[in-house]
Image 1 (cartoon, rainbow, N blue to C red):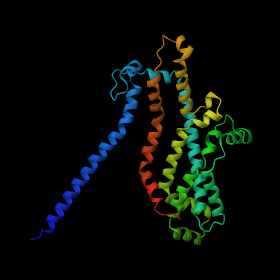
Image 2: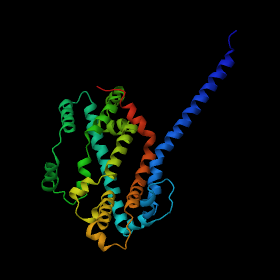
Image 3: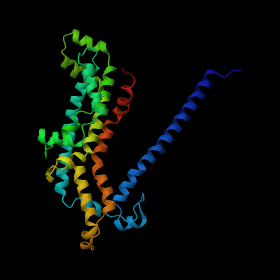
Image 4: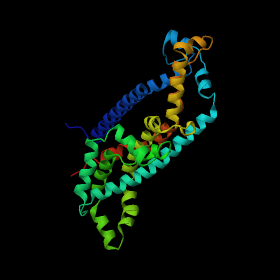
Length: 303
């Protein structure tokens, strides 16, 4: 005698609930494991330097100390200015970069664009071959005259070929009929792009935007090459400079002159990570719902 339909439905729902609960437990455990390094960084930044040297890193500080944060904020004006520089370059660079890369990707996604293949080759070529550090430095400093300018921190990252092709792949998935209908109704290319393509591409744009934010926010290499004025140091490069200064003061002749001063070198590394990751963590939380969708949907269809 077979099972009644109601019994089968009840058993199916029960198995589904058990499976869902198991998946939730596994994800909670995995999330906690991923949070452990973050908790370790925060704990280490609050640990006394002597205790940290004696017992090593731990999730719970044995002796809480704010020496690392106090050392970083000895000159709060520099930190605030560095935040302002970083926020400015990140905001302008991300907005301008998204606009330029989206327009380029849209052109490459159009089958009726006459220069589509040559332009695609040009973009691909820059992915495979790089001009090198010295020619790039000469171009930025001698040709463009951007030495010690915030534009030197923005312009090199305005177009990233990989992000262009990511957007291009996503634009290809958009319904061509919708664009053709808009053109039949008399819409110009600019109107189609800004009023149809951009609103439909929010997941892909948010994903690339997050990558651009991370790229600009974490950059210290370009300031090392092109920035000389301390008032133009972005946050990451300022923290890097503070760290190098602290290491210098604890080694060689400087260490002999400062024997009575205990600099929190190890804990300061962790404190700098905490100071730098706050705003970028907020940006990721704001954009995370678009992140997976933007990465997956654009990869479903290509040429």
